[in-house]
Length: 155
Image (cartoon, rainbow, N blue to C red; front, side, top):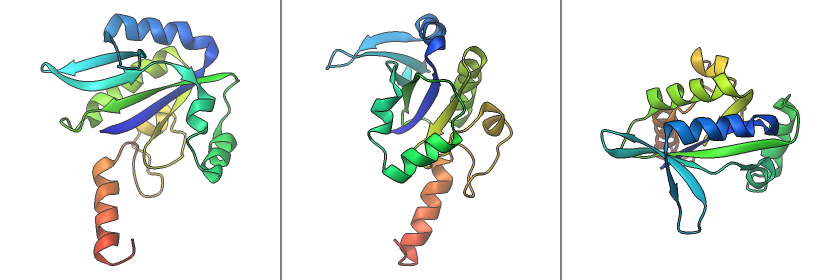
């Protein structure tokens, strides 16, 4: 399972939730948290977690990552986010970009992937901008880089 995060201003919460309600199947986790699901060929592709205050995401970050996020952010607080888990059974890159295009069309914000604390704008994602040698959601590239470092005894 890989994850991305969509971070946006609280004033857009109703628009984002309404979009997810219209385009996704709603379900409830064992802990009774709402989530939305998107399927591809009958198999779950995305598990989109309920919208939460940004502080719960920041609490899981290292101090240098928090500072990096704060330095890049130009959104107006309060901020919210939704975590989007992508099933490992699907490559998912094209679908992630398509979903983010829709979310960015209704809410000003950023996306973040599992690999860096960079706050990605839609323009950076759409133009395949490279940060630290990788594009947004470059799961395979980060995996290959880590394997090379392991093989060279670096990690």
